[in-house]
Image (cartoon, rainbow, N blue to C red):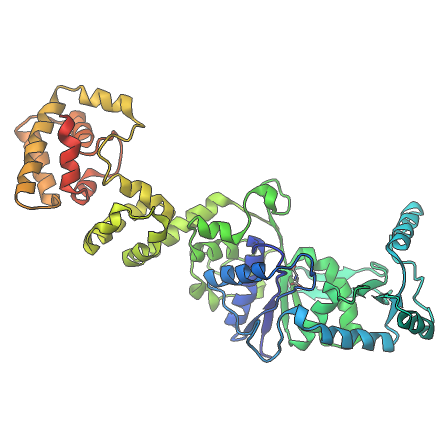
Amino acid sequence: MTVRVRFAPSPTGHLHIGGLRTALYNFLLAKSQGGSFILRIEDTDQERSEKKYEALQMEALRWAGIDWDEGPGEGPCGPYRQSERLSFYKKYADRLIEEDKAFYCFCTDEELAEMKEKAVKENRPPHYDGRYRNYPKSEALQRIAAGEKPAVRFKASLKSFILEDLVRGRVVFPENMVGDFVIVRSNGLPIYNFCCVVDDWLMKITHVVRGEDHLSNTVRQLMLYEALDASRPQFAHVSLLIGQDRQKLSKRHGVVSVDHYRQEGFLPEAMTNYLCLLGWSHPQEKEIFSQNEVVDLFDTTRFTKASAIYDLEKLKYINGQHLRRLSNEDILKRCEKFFPKNHPFFDGSNSWKIQCISFFKDQVQFFNQLPGLLDDLFRIDSRGDDEDELKAIRGLESTPVMATYLKSEIERLLSENKAFAQKDDFSHWMTHIKKELKIKGKPLFKGMRAVLTGAAQGPELVGLIPLTPLSVLKDRMKRY
Ligand code: GLU
């Protein structure tokens, strides 16, 4: 069997991180089995679907490294937009009517509301009361010919259904769970459950991996598979993503669109790594991995049943881990768009930029934290956040003595046409200050930092100073 899976988003908004996780699981399942991953656009809700969201969702998937083998415009089972497949749905809806498995329903919205109200009052499930179930077809056709527009309802099966779900195990849907349900609206547009079954069947989908919130749809879909005599795929209903309050992850919990994370500089490899772990576990319990590393190991037996709590801090941590896995060259290439335009960092030589990245990358989890750190290489005045401490250090007797010496050293290097001090120069300064100027301990370390960087705290000086332009060091020292 060739595995064929699909991701079937509705283009009604930005891609949600839960959607990205679903896409990822399907993608990994396809790739691990040498199968095909299909992108199908479920855009039959004309009011809410927008082309712009289709494009944005595709872009977000590609950003995350999830590319499809078949999708809009490409593949043998197209079209892949449901809005372009209406003739298929019509064909099968007509067939169900012909076989007496579906019927025309002329109920108005008011009648349906009344029906529901009555059932609730009588403590019955709010199912359709079967009003048009046995309505003579000839009469229905006459009313249609006269211009009435009925919905098409499926005759729900009364028996129970059993699903062997790849995540949840045996799921039993008891009898009479749903009433006769609409498959085509009175405006002629088909309903999700129906399109989904027709498409999964015609597109030869072998596995459907989706959130467990779809289980209530699944029972309807099982009925439709049976009525259409269609082979049904295997289902894997994965646990939902939930917030810290254990509620389904939604906008209330903060930003949930993939686009947001992308703009913020989260790495796609970190995003997919983290999402993969929310509902699936690595066979060696590894936490940090790339898609390539996991593709051969991925299988449906390691899905977890429990809901997964979305933890932004964990995602940030994983982002930092992935950032550190990148080569300095790669970081340099990818970080530029997170800098303000014309940032002086990009005026430097390539080897200097690479050294800067190598030095600063351990201190960040995100690309967009780099500009702030690199600003420290160009800032002349103090940062302003540690004034009290700085004042105390500057007030030490030894600080101006040390500054006079450092100033002369920097002048000397500049007169030799040097642009940067070397690590050796820095070590030489330290030795000189210790031995000749007799400054040691805190006054030495704190004093040197204050004089050379204009800050009381910061990264290791021996790494930082050789990366700071001598011209900047000179300007900083003007105050002494
Ligand atoms: N369009 C549906 C959704 O976005 C797809 C559900 C499914 O995978 O069957 O939720």
